[in-house]
Length: 171
Image 1 (cartoon, one colour):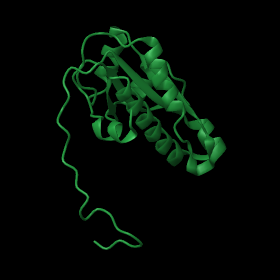
Image 2 (cartoon, rainbow, N blue to C red):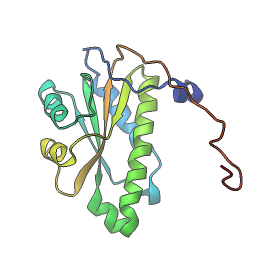
Image 3 (cartoon, one colour):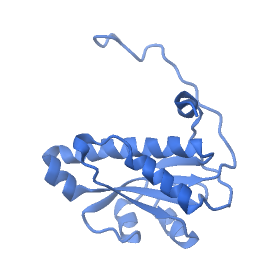
Image 4 (tube, rainbow, N blue to C red):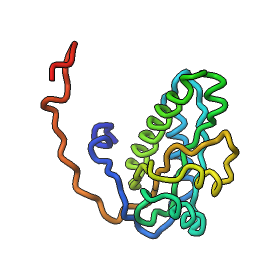
């Protein structure tokens, strides 16, 4: 698949078919995340893949941004202690950037595999941390819902005029 096709075709999907996503497919998505760039090559991410209806129900209870009924959710977490130890004060900023790039890789890889995804930042971090039995230093940063798409929304309008500048801001 052409990268531009994936960039322009990927949508935030909130309507999923009921069929499960195969474990091997979910592992490919995690692998795509692992291949994302990471500041200082920290690689402090940890992934928890949630697929059981009971656990998905519980995660949804503490995640107002998790809409629809996805058959899988990938929690992208970061080892904050390790990030701080290796990157000092920059650790918190680096893991935020790393998580975003990781999620983008996961979502683009999912698109190529004919799966829909949606990044979710609206969730109770401590609640998800407890549900997933994450130790204190491992904090969930972003959830990505994953499933076979039932309904694809229309792309939002994009504009280029007035948003880019060369050499200096001229707005």
